[in-house]
Image (cartoon, rainbow, N blue to C red; front, side):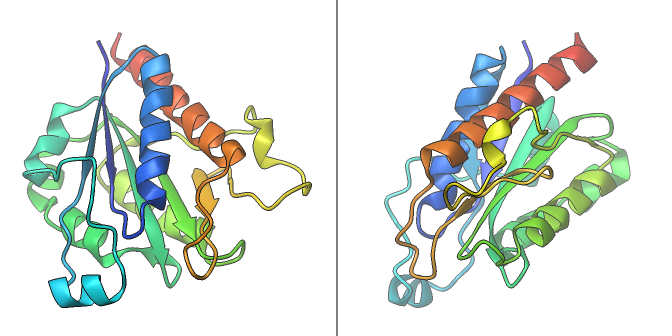
Length: 200
């Protein structure tokens, strides 16, 4: 059975909810799924002062080497000034050995993110994640327009052909909407289906 890893970083819970939805979609596509988060690198006093969520429901990944155990990896990070968070970057920067061995070549990859506003860097953040996936030799799956929910202007919503997204608002008060979670599920299912076709 196809094995999918949903790997994310979340400060306030938005990415955790999106990760759950991606995993749900991947399971509906026939895959077994693990959801793990990368370690927190911010000092405890900084995280506490900023109100970072501490009651996480997903375990921390033990080692970057574990990435090689999966057929597909879906990476999620909130936006930090138009790019991935330093926590995710720090983790991926440890993958030089995997890259050197070609351990992720041919595997399936995808990305998802959140921003404070509709124009807060969703697509550039997705590209910062996708760039890593391509350097690892992975086949990238986006959020294709088969998911029609990302179209239209009837409500504020995330979504991009490059990956599922959500909008958190400047104070983090807006959690992922039903449409945004559906987009994450759709992308997760596409990842699982693509990996199954490649590795069947």
